[in-house]
Amino acid sequence: MLGGMSVLGLSGLTLVVGKLRENGRNLEHRIRERTTDLAEANTELEKRNQLIRQVFGRYLSDTVVANLLESPERLKLGGERRKITILTSDLRGFTALSERFPPEEVIHILNLYLEYMADVINHYQGIIDEFMGDGILVLFGAPIAKEDDALRAVTCACAMQLAMGSVNEKMETLGWPPLEMGIGINTGEVIVGNIGSEKRTKYGIVGSQVNLTYRIESYTSGGQILISEQTFKEVRSSVEIIGEKQVQPKGVSQPITIYEVYGVRGRYNLFLPKEEEIFFPVPQEIPLLYTILHDKQMDNPVFSGRLIKLSAKGAELQADIPNEIPHKLTNIKINLFISQNSTQGSEDIYAKVLEKLANTRSFYIHFTAVPPALVAQFDNLYKMISQKPN
Image (cartoon, rainbow, N blue to C red; front, side, top):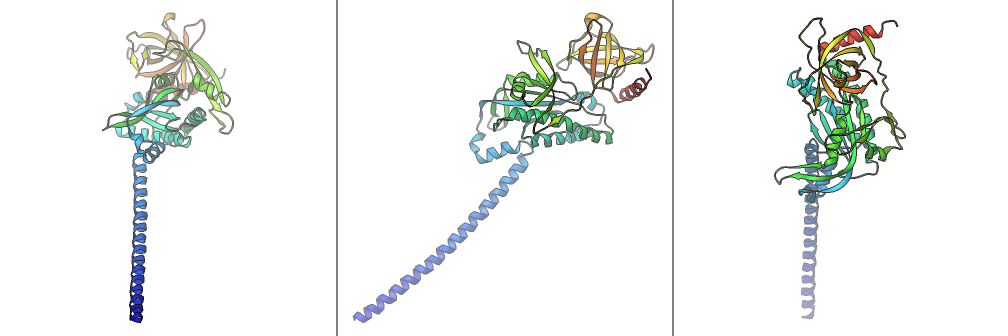
């Protein structure tokens, strides 16, 4: 009996052990299945995240998208106060120029230009906050702040201006006149975060420093980079300046100093080409009318004057009445009367006032938008007078 019980007990133990082994194999199989499922789920999640980055990366920067994917709580509305460097750029006279071309061609040109600029901005880790027609708003220091935000912003601006050479090579092949861009940079405290509603949200910035950046940019002529005093303080050891001006932007109670950038020394070593403007007297002075523009709106008064000298990109004008000389950095609209005894003015020409000549009625301008027909006339006239023996 004891022997029978021993045999029975051994058999039962064998059955239990077998069952445990079978359960173990089943558990291992289920674990492998779970592991495979988890791996597939992770792969699928990664593919989905890549798709989200690819799709939304066209509307937001990769940095912003990555931050949102890693920390979804950042999608909540609200912002924080922080110091950043803001860059804004704008094509000079593009609106007036685009009115002469079919909309499809304008969009093609604009996309080509923005593609070049976006590549440069991404290279210097700027965050493109917004495309506004031909304008770009770029952030350095949000959502992630770095010690060299201001320096990278100025370097990025230099690289953007240098990239305009490649842009204009494309413009020439497409039959467009060259484009010129102005850039303004400012450093200051803003509110940065998610702005809008639960249904429609935008990652952006608000504050007076944003407005000031736009004002600084409005003072630029084509090819220029102007920075605020606060930005200059951040980068003065690495950036070379070729001029400074005191201005009083709209909405600012006291005059401010803005600085024109020539280049960046050190590891970046980027410098803008120096172009000396030489003004040659025209064979016969050209009568004209000009109107002063404020915030792209025209004042009513129309003043008369004459074009007396011409350069490659500008001219020297002479006002008929001394107290009608526009202020430095003012935008003006010009109509020339090229044909003698003609009462019909030319198409609108847009320009920025560079400086007034002391004790005279003359002032220099930089052309920002010239009709194609006049571009050809100006080019031919400039070649003739610049090659004429002294």
